[in-house]
Structures are given as C-alpha cells and as structure tokens.
Amino acid sequence: MKLHSYLLLLSGILVSACSSPKNNSGESAKQTIAAEITHSFFIAGPDFTGILGESGEILWDAERPGARDGYVLDNGHVLICWSEEVLEFNKDKKVVFRYEKSALNKELGTAVRLDNGNTLITELGDKPRILEVNQAGEIAVAVPLQPETDNAHMQTRMARKLANGNYLVPHLLAFAVKEYSPSGEVLQTFRTDLPELGGREAKNWPFTAIRLANGNTLINLTNGNKTVEMDPAGKVVWKVSNEDFEGSPFQDPCGAQRLPNGNTVIASYGAKEGIKLFELTPEKEMVWKYEGVNRVHHFQVLTTNGVALKGTPLK
Image (tube, rainbow, N blue to C red; front, side, top):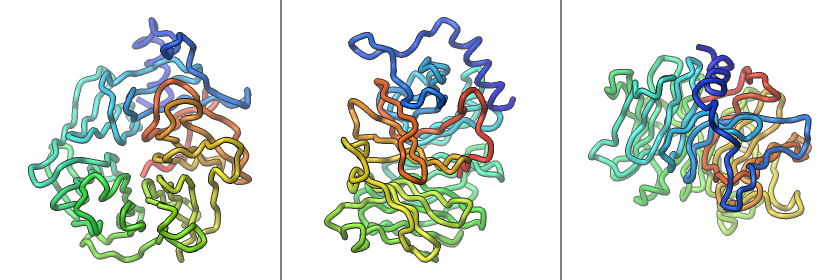
C-alpha cells in the first residue's frame, strides 16, 4: 500500500473518532505560520509516537511514547526504535519485525529500513556498533564504531547508510561525524568543533547527519543550537542558528529532514513550549512551524497540502 493511500486509510478508518490533540488547557495543537503550507508528519518523541495529520489530528498512535527514531515505510508499515527494541507494525498494528538489544550493549539509537530489506540499527555501550538486521531478526552485518567515549548514551544517534555502501555516523562527544566503510574503517571525518562554529566551547554535538543529493552533509548540532551544511571537504557552506531569529527556535535540535523543495525541517527537542518543529528556506525564512503539545525527538514529514512527498531521503 502506498504512503498516501495508507494515510487516507488511517485518517478515514483507524481514527475516525479522534479529534485534534489537546494540551492541558484544552487548546488544539497549533500548526503553521504560512496558511498555504500544512504537513502531516510522523513523530518519535517522549510524549507521543505516531502520526499527526495536516490539521493536527492523530492519524496513528503507537500508544507508547519515548521513541528515538523511526519512519513510515513505503508499504505503509511503521518502523520505530525505542531504547530497548526496534519494532515494525503493519497497518493492523501487528508487529511483523522485532529486534531486541543484545546483552553486549546498553541501548539502541537508530532504525532505518534499507534498500536491501535489512534494518539499520545502532547499538551503544561496551561494544558500540552498526548492525544490519534481516527480516528474520538475524544480524547480517556488524560494523564496530569508534565513538571516543564510554558514555553509551552519548556515543551516537542517527546513523545512516549511504548510497556508496558506507555509513554516516554522528559522534556527539567526539565533535565529529564519521563516514565508515563496511569493514569499520573511518574514511572521512567532518569536524563540528571548527573555530568558525565556536570551537568546543560552543558544544556543537552532532546528532543527525544526512548526506544530501548535492553531495553535502546536513548536520544538526544539539547543545550548539544550530544546523550546518558541509561540503565534501568539511567546509561549512550554510549555517543557521538562533542568531538568525527573534526568540530561540533552536532548542537542542535533534531530527532533521531536507525536503524535495530544498527547505530544511528541524526538530527542537528541548522545547517544552512553543515551536517544536519548523521549516526553513535556504534563505533562512521560517515558512512553517508546529507548536503542538508533543515534543519532537525525530520526525518524518509525510505530506504537504495533501500531497505525499516524493524523493525525500529516508536514509
């Protein structure tokens, strides 16, 4: 089932009785600043994990908050990573894939379905590693990581597999995004403690790193409260932060997505009130924002003005 059809099914059948999510004061979730732009999107967050429609209504609810990563797949299933396990739900909410954290490590941090059918998962702890797990739940590939810290929670977050077969992995306390070969060799390092970004004092911990279609790498920097785009040589070619806005929309930015129209959507995970997700043009104009009750750790924009997104990189 295609994504757009799946969303219609969710909207028309699964949640026909649902109304817009409310906060404690009874106010409807707020979405948009430009009336012509609306999005539906998946949220992995501490308060809610599921799908919100373009009017803020709940389209699908995992009924289990605290997710870290996840996506709505092309077949309409939903893949979600919690700290202890990764689950894939079909349209009937039946679990059709499960991977539980091994005894070797302490937590999980990534869940992405790959083109080869495997699921990309990161395990953090004494033996930090990237895994590719097949549909039977068996480990098909294991790549050791070099996070430069024993703090499992800070070793890495959203790792992604690249089209060339390598892996792009952000290491928070190493102030580095590393590209690994399938054998675990570090082929390239993108430094986030550059002087032009404020050095290590700025605490630019890389959280999400995405290889863009133009060959550049988009990186969200959590404590540094900024988003940067680097060219293949590691030079900063685009930077946006709270310095570009009144107020402070960047509050511990975690998840990020580059839309097909060239805009960038950023999750402000640290925001307990106000803007929790927002869309910026390349000129740094904020054209959409979500101010609902739900905090956003990771997300996936699914539709814009009723049309399913095409060509959005999911890995």
